[in-house]
Length: 320
Image 1 (cartoon, helix red, strand yellow):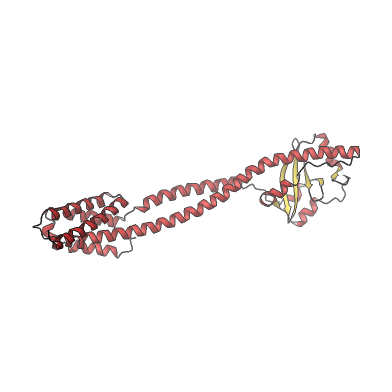
Image 2 (spheres, rainbow, N blue to C red):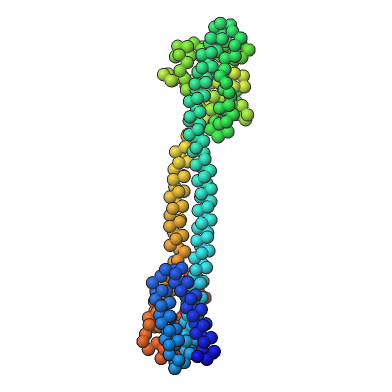
């Protein structure tokens, strides 16, 4: 076999290998059939030296090159679009992680609310004993202020300074007081009557100042704890009538679920889009395969310019 013929066959094998890689990538039946048919044509020339080898070269020039270039263009366009989808997926994942973290904090908050309620109840019971016995013992449970320090920024509701001032106003209130705490007398009586059974209700803040509001378990009464002064007073909720106390936990959960569903859908779309072929191109490839599968194809190779031109024109379109 002369070197000229050998070089064309070698070049043909390289073209077919590129076509094979694209057929694997797109996993498309028509592309795979074109690849197989191109192999058959190549083998026909390889096994029959009497055939004009220039016709094989012309076949690749007119057909295979255009198909490969067209598929590569589609592949590049698809990969760009898939990359944009995964950028959106990554942004959604970041948001999910942040919101999921908030949900974890919410669970910790719910658990620590119970612990804080227990600390306050024990502290008030101890304060009652200290005041009754005129004792100098420290009445508060250990680390009683840690709860507000930990959760105020994320879970306490904002008050105006005027609302805050009204809540902690001692005017016209009779109180018990010692060096450690001040408590409204009527509140202490109510606590004793209810055996100091209360629970954390909400947290409030104005700047760096915080208030913890507690509710009696068996009655619709509320009191506040102002840690900065260790002050306990009945809490007038009418002062908070304009306060938006909507819990947005369910909203967060809904958003997380929607983002997770959206990402699943985007991943599914990305998998499809990665190997998607426009309908116009798919039809053109089907027509092209029909032509190269014709038993008399080689005899009409010189007339294949029309199909070649259609393929080349498709390369210039904005379909992808």
